[in-house]
Image (tube, rainbow over all chains, first blue to last red; front, side, top):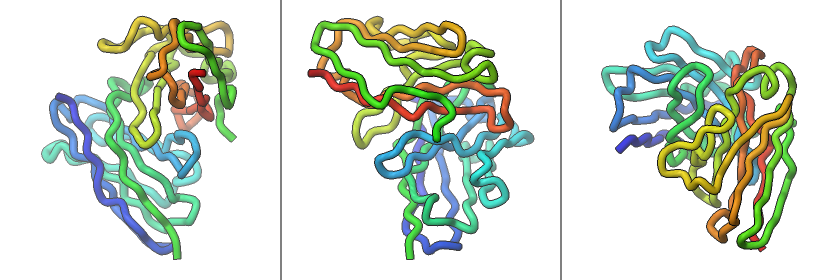
Length: 119
Length: 111
């Protein structure tokens, strides 16, 4: 069974940092693009970042560029999102998702991890 | 403001059909056949329902179908059932640097 499990969320003060992890199982992780998508409380889905299969290509939404870094460890079947200079507006559930190609769909999604930025 | 425009809400009675629209531009929906649709129940992760405009993943009911005309994609749910009540989001590949855009979401209420 293909499974994605996020971890690393929590409460952090504005200006702080967190690193999210997404553990993958049930498929050949190193063959797929991976994405992070977030959802603020009561709001819609917003794409955050993506990384290609070998980690050589990354893209970011403008609102996280320069603050967030996506990476992956194919030996550990794990995707990461390093989040620095966090802002109150970064408060959201963060989902990781698998994609079959650079312009592909997201399937499956992890269960999400909640990041709360508050003083 | 979301890049793709969806109606905030739609409703229908059991057994009826509904259609949710997703309007973009020639840089996203209109320019590529890379539109996907997701269903999200409260407190749950999104689930893929349609990919590449009109393809249905294995395990998704054939009551769900997708189409596209110009800059607008559509998700149609036939024979509405109570379990279809959820939020629905469209997504598209885009030529912009972000490469991915979502719609604002549509809340489907089954009356």
